Structure formats: C-alpha cells, structure tokens
Amino acid sequence: MSATAPPASVTPPLPPSLPGTPPPNTPPRKPGSPLAGFFIDLGIAIATLLGLSMISGVLWGMYRAVEVVRDQGPDAAAAAMQQVGQPGALAQILMALFATGGAALIVYFLRRSATPAERAQSWQAARQPSTWGWTLLVAACVVVGSNLISWLAKLAGSEPVPTNLALMEQSLAHFPWFLALFAIVLAPAYEELLFRRVLFGRLWQAGRPWLGLLLSSLAFALIHEVPGTSDNGPLEIAQLWLVYGGMGAAFAWLYQRTGTLWAPIAAHALNNAIALAALVFFGMH
View 1 (cartoon, rainbow, N blue to C red):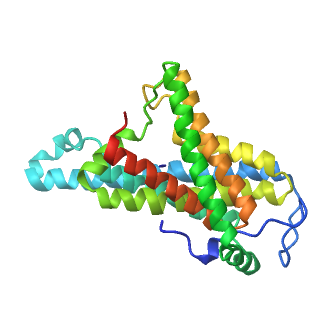
View 2 (cartoon, one colour; view 1 turned 180 degrees about the horizontal axis):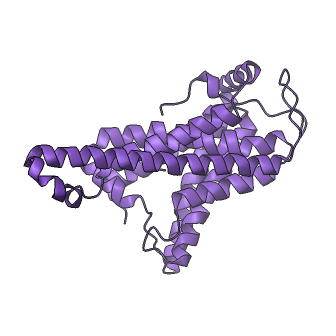
View 3 (spheres, rainbow, N blue to C red; view 1 turned 90 degrees about the horizontal axis):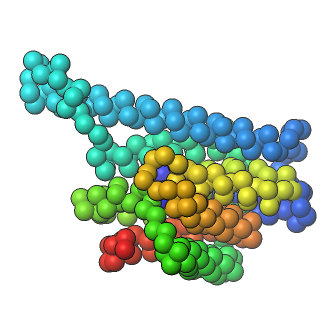
C-alpha cells in the first residue's frame, strides 16, 4: 500500500478541452518526445528511489551499530555488525517513506511542478460535487474488481501473498495508528504524485493519455510486486500485476476525468483503508 497529502502547490491541471491542448495560461511545451520525457522521469524516479533507499539503509545500520556498541561496550565493536540484524517493521516503513516519498517529491519539483493556473484549476475541480461522486464510484470498482480477480484466481488454484503482507501484519501488531497514517494518508499522496501527476500527466498533456495510462499503470504494478522478492510464482505475480495495474489504470482515468489529483489520492486512500480494515477484522485468508 505501497508525505502528508501534498499542499495545493502540487495539484494538477484540469483536463484540456481538446486532446493535446495545454490548459490556459500554461507556458508552451518544450520540444521533444513526450515518450522520451516519460522514461526520463521514470529513470530519475527509480535512481532517486534506489539512492535514497541505500542512504536510509546505511543510516539505519549506523544507528543500530551505535546502539549495540553502547549496550555492550567498546569491546563489542567487532561483533556489532553481526548483531545489527534486519530493519524492523517501523524502520522499513520509515525507509519506504523516505525513499519513495522523497523520489516522488524530487521528480515532481524537478520535472512536473504545477503552475499557479494549474493549481487554481485543480482546486476548482475539487469543489465540484461530481468529482467526489466519481471518486467513490472508482474506489468501489477498484475494491470489487480486485476481489473478483482474487476470487477467480483462487478457483484456479492461485493464491499469491503480496510482498508487503508480512510487513503490514507486523506493523499492525506493534504500531497500528502509524500504519494507518502511512497506508491511508502518506502512501496514497506520494504514489499519486509520482505515478499519476508526473508519469501519466506527461503523456496526457502531450495528447497521448491511453499510452500514459498503460505505461504508468505498468510501472505502478512493477514497483508494488518486484519479481524475485517473494515466493510467488509467475502466475501469482501476474495476478498481482493485474490487480495493481488495474488499480493504477482506474486512478489515472479518475485523474483525467475529474482534473484534480485530489480525486485519485482520495480513491487510493479509500482502497487502502478498506484493505487495512479487512486485514484487521478478517486477516489475509
């Protein structure tokens, strides 16, 4: 499942009146291929995410090493690295927040920051009652669609375990309120900022929304279920990609339909809240 909700300065433009036409009062687009721009954005995001992940891992390792030496004395320094161990659930969530949230903010401000006109148009769209009707509808469709895919796959003998399930269960047992804050507020905000505003938004503005929807949804699925990081087989991974990719496509469509990033952020938050409630009351199975 897989930053607090971004301030008004990160809100997006309304959809253009004609495909490929920029919103009013926006500067002319720079020449160049929008598809190349998409992959540049994605490459910067991945490199930044990996770099911040490494930094957060090093900082956590240094912190744990200092704790071990402090508890056991200076003579234990040689054995400190063997006792550092793996990051706990809280440390992993904070590292994810630092790395992925930081990558989203850096790419946004570096590549796709909103103009004052875009921010004003987004707030105008957010004040429309229809925006929130569409948000509720899309959130409901995502929940129903995801469960339908899981039910059909279960009939076929496929029951994948999401990579982040163990982390969610540990977090729920030890700090449920922080997990709720992370899953319902922070993660939806920075994920929508990266995948919908930056990646999908670039191709949408260039008049190629369907290509943007496809590529950004694929990237969204891949970052949530990386092959080789779990015991899931190819069929199970494909099922999870279908669920996450469908979710990403629905949120991209909602963004385009309403013209405000607050709509997919809210739909994403609702989806995560329902998933978290299901984990609390029913468990995974």
